[in-house]
Image (cartoon, rainbow, N blue to C red; front, top):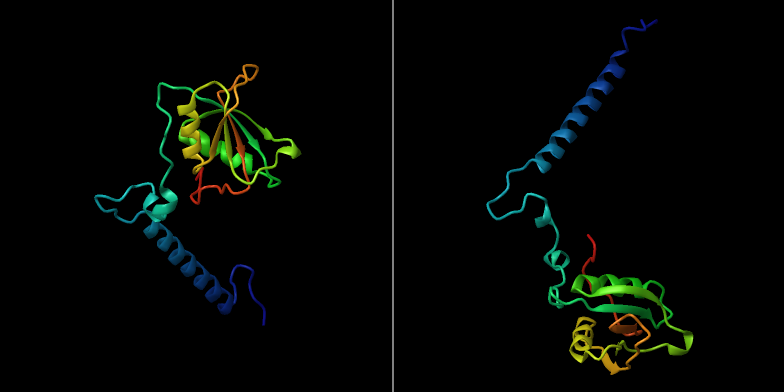
Amino acid sequence: MEFSPLKAPPAAAARRRRRRVALLIMLAAIAAGVFRPRGPHEPADGAADVPAALAKRPTRVVPDSVRIKVEVLNATSTRGLGRLATAWLRDQGFDVVGTGTAPSAERLDSTLVLDRSGHADWAQLAAMAMGGARVEARPDSLRYVDLTVLIGRSWRPPPQSLYP
């Protein structure tokens, strides 16, 4: 039995038809999900699909008219903790101008905020933003920062996504 190259066997044609129908059904399902009608209080960008705990952004604690320059030092052996703390403090409104790792002799269990410029109220703001860190006054006029935040082992990054 010979088949013409222009005419496929009936079984192959049936398989192609089934694949096309399945593809059309999938495309219709995708289009229905994307273009579904939205309620009056539902955002159009799909943010309603994100759980409320993940969608909540940190509130800014630093007043808009104030610039608090902060240096963040990771005082633990956990890699990347200083970077996460930097992002968290920037979301809180602090101007993080430097990050790094503290010397190995300064490994800490709890987070410590050092007041470098004599602004105890700014140090308290940073301590509250870090979840209740200790504050010490250690003036240092050679540093061009107002605060130094030494991240301790007990600090945990916030549970929500920082940059969704």
